Amino acid sequence: MDTFWRLMPRLYYSTRKFLLNRGNKIGLKESMPRFLDYVYQHDGCIQREICDEFSSNASSVSKWLASLEKEGMICRRRNAESTREVNVFITGKGREAEKQMFEVYKEMDQIIFQDFSTEEREQCLSYLARLTDNMMSYREEGY
Image 1: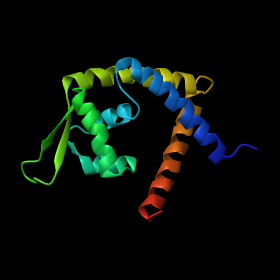
Image 2: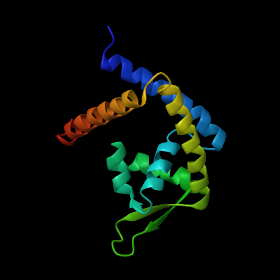
Image 3: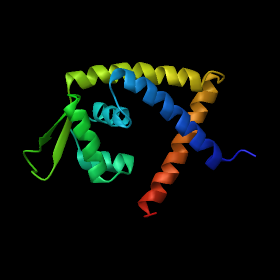
Image 4: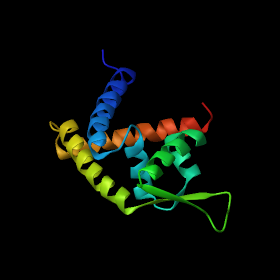
């Protein structure tokens, strides 16, 4: 019998492999696309917000941001008002890579939802959002 804990990893790893393959062709390695997408959506965010979003520790996020910065996709600047904070901005090169990744995301959506009606797709995304919210609220309780 299929269960969430059996199906979700299969979906995760198959989509991850797809994104790694396509991302490598654009010059993005491993976790770079998800961090780049977040910075694209939240230009000027602080590193702590990225840590919170991905439930990652500061050193891991800093490593990935350093890789993106080295590739010229983002830049980091110390916040003038709060010197303890570092703001993260997307560059022109990063915007171009994100546009290419957006096409990859659209392709992946077409593959994943190929046999779904519009209503089924929306319902599935609604369920996934609720599942994510449930797990994120549990995470905040300190698992």
